[in-house]
Length: 145
Image: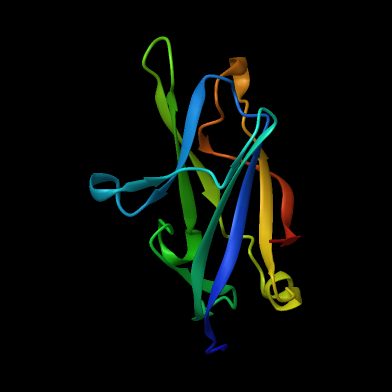
C-alpha cells in the first residue's frame, strides 16, 4: 500500500456552460460551504482550479483523496459545482463531479507545473445546466498551469 501524502493540483473544465448561470466550486459541507469562483471563465468554458491531498491508498489500491473541496465516502469521492441563475427566475442546482477515476498512472506521470484536468459538458437536457452526477467527456489528463 502506498504511504505517500502530497498535494495534487486539479482542474475541472465545464465546456459549453449555459449562459445566464453562475458556477462556483463548493468548499466545505453544505451548511458551512464557501463558494469559490472559476479560475477562468469565457462563453465557451469555465475552469475551476483546486488541490486535493493524496494520503496513501484505499484498500482497492486507488488514491485516498482528502481536502476541503472533497465530498463523499472514501471509495466514491467527488466535488460539487454549485449553479444558480444570474437573472430571470430563481434556479439553483449542483453538478457532482466524480473523482473516482483519478488513478496512480496519471498522478505519477505529472511533471512540475502540471495539474490533472477533466472536462464535462455543462449543458444538460432541455438546455439547462447539467446537474446531479455528470459524466466526464475527457479522462483525467495532465494540463499545464
